[in-house]
Amino acid sequence: MIVPLSPGAPAHYFQEVAHLHETELQAGLLAKFGVPFLADFYHYLARDPGCVLLVALEGDKVIGFVSGTHDIRKFYRRFVLRRGLKLAMRLVPYLLARRSVSTIASIRRYMTSRDTTQLPVSELTSLAVDPGTQRKGVGKTLFAALQEHFRSQGIEVFQVTAAKTQPAALRFYPALGAKLVTKTQLGTLESFVFVCPTVGRAIRQV
Image 1 (tube, rainbow, N blue to C red):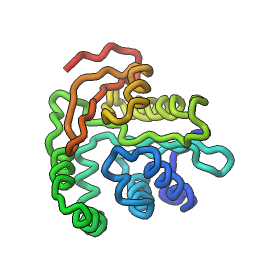
Image 2: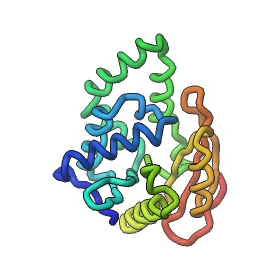
Image 3: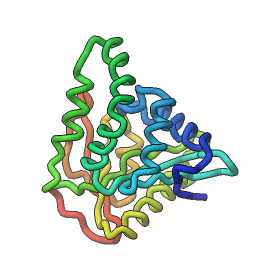
């Protein structure tokens, strides 16, 4: 069963989403901040009117989730303004432990350097499925549910980024109609940007 999470959803749902993100999306920066931060992040995302958080439930357990935003740059600006202090408190120990500022540069590039004249502003921000339920169509069902949400908002295309270290994702999105349009660099990690339709239509290469 696929359901949208509202801010009033049971707290353990957000904890389970956070745990899935930390364990299944390790290539990304947010996974390094830990479950408490991620639970707060997804609780904030569920309240944001420009975002959606959908979960796949098996009984009362979250076995997968997908999140998306109508405008990625506007969302991150809102998040930093409203959660910037908490983000900084999580980020500083992470940087000190590694004696590096490359992570800050990576965040800044991600949030400010998107060429929105060429790429859709709407984005699938994360998708993860419990390893015990993979290959059962949960990921495809979540992806289709996000497509339907975007379509209901009048959005025809959206983007999604997958890292070179995520071979399963690099196969998954093209199999569902996504087209590779460009490459990007998140810190030292090479990543690939796909554009996905919400309706049956060809996507122009950019």
